Length: 425
Image (cartoon, rainbow, N blue to C red; front, side, top):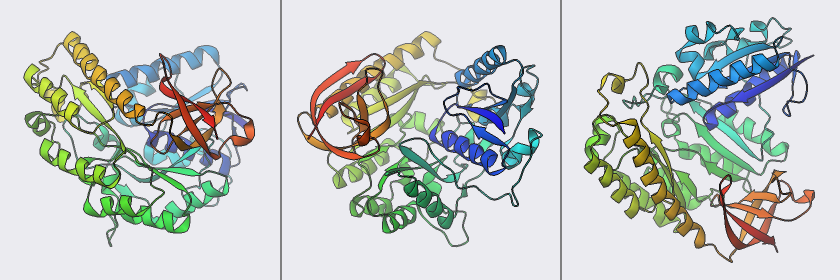
C-alpha cells in the first residue's frame, strides 16, 4: 500500500474533489490517505486553484517545498490551475504528473499503481470534516468577464439526485450532522437534465430523507434567489440561516462590464426577500475592487451600497487579470496601491458590519454544532446555525454533537477573527 498526502487550494468544490480523489485511490486498493501527513509520502496530490494569480503562485511554492522535503516523492498536480496551464506545470522539474479533470478517474493508472476497481463510476466519498461537502454540480456557463472558471471547469453538469442522496446517506451513516451544498454554480443545478430540476428539488429531497440533518448552502449567485428557492428556505427548518451571495460591485456600470446578469436594484430586491423569511439571517458577499475602468466614484458607490444592505460580512479581492478572459484584454486603470486602499476601506466596513451582527446574539442561548478539533488553547470549537464561531470548554464526547450554548463573551483575535466564548447549558 502506498502512502498519499493531499493538499487543496481554493473553494469548497476543490475540497470535495480532493475527497473524491482520495476515494478513487482507496477504492482502487492501491493507496491509503495519510490525512495527518505523518508518514513519508510515496505520492502527493496537489489540487490547485487558478481564480487569481496569487493562487497560482501559492501552488508553485508548495510544489517546490514538497520536493525539497521529499525528493523521492511523486508529485501529482490537478485542479483548475493544472487544467488551465497544464504545459506550464508539466515543465516544472518537481512535477511528475499533471492530471486533467477528465483524467482524474484514472489517477491510480497515471501513477502506475494497481487498480482493483471493476468500473469507473463516481465513488461515494468520505469526509473527515464536521461539515461534509456535497457537490451537486460542476462547471459554469455564465462567463463573467473576469472569471476563468467556465474555461477550465466547462459547462454546467449536474449530479443526479439519486447520487446526491447516496452521498448524503453515506455522510449521515458516518455520523455527520451537517452537509454543505456546493458546486461551481449551484444556481444552475438541473438545467442540463432532459427533465429540468432545480436547487430547491435537492433541498426538499435531502430534508424528506433526513429531516434532522443541518443543510447549509455554499456560495449562491443572485440569480439563484428564485421564488421556489425562497419558498424552500421558508419551509425547510433545517436550512441554516447563512448564505453567501456574491455582489462583485455596487455600481451598475461596473456590473455590466463584468457581464454580471443583474443590476444593483435586482440584487437588493432578492436579498430583501431572503431576509423577509429569516430576519436574523447571516449574509456574506464577495466584492472585486480595482476592476478595469472602475472609477473612484464607482468604488464609493459600492461602499455606500454595501453599507445600506443587510450584508453581515465581506470577502474583498483586488482585481486579478486571468489570461483568456474577456477582461484580460482591458487596460488596467487602478494602481496596485489604490487597489490595496480600496480593499482596506471595504474590509473596515465589513468588520464593522460583522461585529454589529454578532452583537445581536450576546447572552443568547443558541444551538452549536461542535467540531472534531480543538483550538490551540484546548477549547472545543463549534458553529451556530448562523455560522458564528463559538469556543467552549468541555470533553471530547461533545464533538460532532449539537449542544445549547450561552454566548457570553465576544472576542477578537488576529488569527481567529471574531468569535464568542460560550458556556454549555
